[in-house]
Image 1 (cartoon, rainbow, N blue to C red):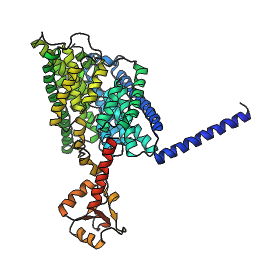
Image 2 (tube, helix red, strand yellow):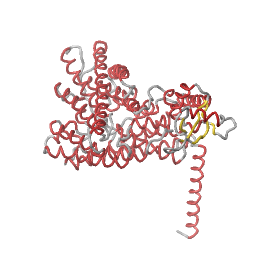
Image 3 (cartoon, rainbow, N blue to C red):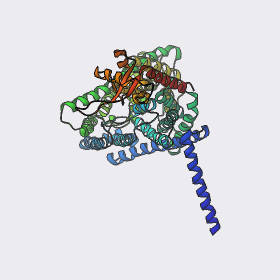
Image 4 (cartoon, one colour):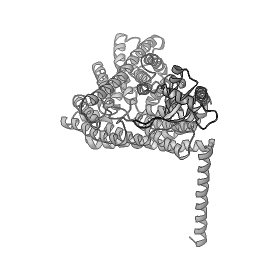
Length: 562
């Protein structure tokens, strides 16, 4: 290249960098335009798709290395031929590594997953914890590779949310923009995990954003398709499960059976969820009552899983081999019932032991086994008026998963896309609707929202129940220098009576104080060290708190209906 050509190239590169810097500055100050946002959605979709792909390939590679098989799709069958001590040792070693990772990257030893993404979307301006999220993804990868009995979708969803959070922080995105970016990342992650673009987009809207705003649909759909393309470049356009082409639905005669299946599936879903919560409570109780270090909790769970896997290797990992056998009718009634019970136990041990992973795939497996068991009984009792038992397995898979996730729409779609069978939609929809109706009466709407409620985050009741927790007292109060602030003498009188609030608290702590004291304002203080008096910041006026609450509710409604 000539000297003049080199100079021209350098000038062009310099101009391009300057233009990029100016564009980024404008985006940070004013937010991205619609076209820019769609390009960002595409980029996040591609990145999340690759994250899901690498996560899946990483599990396969590590499983192949540890268990010594190249065909990880039939790991359960192969594991039955391994020495018992190897099946026992691998989950224990995995639990030790998981405990170290979580102890280093989190403050509470808890794996981050879908519930944390939902909380981030609602309460933290569309952002999630990055360090804890990366640690949780790595811990879940090791869990699923070393015999943990959970799903890969929850960790992938949170990993994608970490990517969206990084982008949102880079461009200083507002809450609405950041939430939409979060939805794009989640949609792409789910789509890439299941090769299901429609269900991925609906899952992001129904479960994470918890609204169907028209504004958010286009970028989320773009990201979802991008994630699916990444999956299909590697695996092709095949469905996750292949159903046998036999039997059909005797619509009018057989529909009552699917109503009954929905009832059974709803109860099974509640049992699965409550078993996980019970195991978590028991784990917490054991930690409090014994000198067991937090870092060893996953290893103890790994020991229990390994002991169970010696006799029942079907519990190892995601469980797609057993799910496929249920959907193709390769299991007998006794096997379907026993494997369903054992899977519930194994998932509870895994998640109660803080090993990592998600609940989506286990719900699919338990649902398929439940549906198959129900179908085997139904077709045996009424052989002349019933279709195939595998149709019940398909409907059961959707019904249990929908009840656990609290997502009847996206779960119905994901069952169709996983199997490629669109002819049995009525049976699946009937079972899903009944199971969801039953489970929502017995838990806080879904597994994820119940998880959050157990931590004191009450998203299930709607914005009016959690918006106050997003507003800091310090951002609403009137400082003592403000001419409209309450007099310092009046503030100190109330402080002497014990009526005050810390400036770092939120309005959900302030509102009960207003109700109990009956005062028009509450002094805002900083609580000093022991033996020192509080420092007065200003006062929180009741009318200001109510105005802030109303503004926040209006913003939430405007976003939902935009």
